[in-house]
Image (cartoon, rainbow, N blue to C red; front, side, top):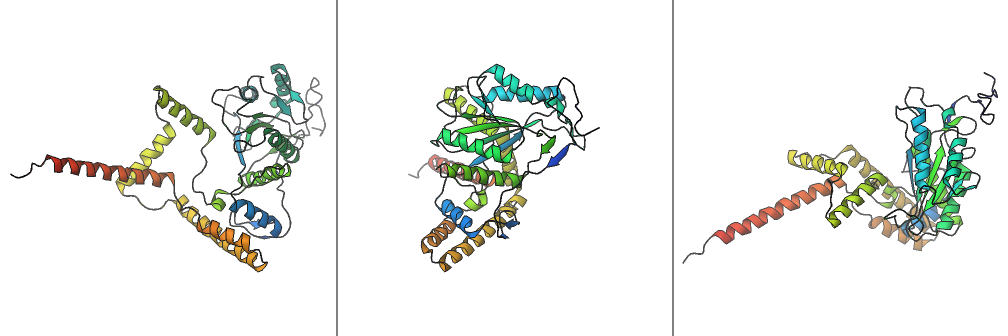
Length: 373
């Protein structure tokens, strides 16, 4: 097939160059190079960039959050997947009540405009199955979040600048949700931007998102925020000394509904995922299985790497005379919280509960003994 042959005469805007390719988003790094504990790869940041991030980290600058989820891709076929993208567009616009912006900056302020934008994506022109015959996502749902009280206008501008840079030649729409503007019940306090990204660009090349790309995206988003006067950082949990993963948005909403049900006396069944984790932790405790899990071993190794890098950077700072920042790095390293997991917390709570009950039973038995006359 010639490269620019028109597939459908009634769709002259969509041609099939369209040798379907997979490409990796470019990572934006500087020059230089050293080994990084966060990935075991080369860290291409220069020393001034590393120092700036150290300063933000020890001062606990707000951390940017980016969550990515593929849209519906089940066996129902391309039509069902396309309808799923349309539903999510309506969801982020709250059925047309919130303003949506596309990749050109055009404002979509009605349900009709959103439907027109969705139709222009020509999702039926994308591949629906990969090389191994697995279903493919027609789009990706990306959420950019910052803490409460972050300026929403500047945050939206930062996301738009980031998207123009990283998603060049892709179609996308985005909308910002804030506590003040979101008409949904119990809207979160923190502002967040929903971005729906068409999986293939206008040349038919499909985006492929890896974990390393998310790190690069977080750094790019934080940079755009700082350029607009918003203090923002992008470090890994290990670098911040955090053990726990953040809760997924789906589980967060389930937990919130459950807690609201408890408060109002209309509690439903307890969240299934958390209940299963509780049962597994209790069974391991009962079986006497105290061996560290592979992820706990990996956490300990990352903590050693982080401590080593912090100590090395503190020494370099002292060599160049920045004793103030070196002292802050030392204090930060000394105050890193002990490593912990949800599983260990559950088991400690169970042990404490058993001890408390044994103590109460002992007290009851002692009270039952009549004093000798």
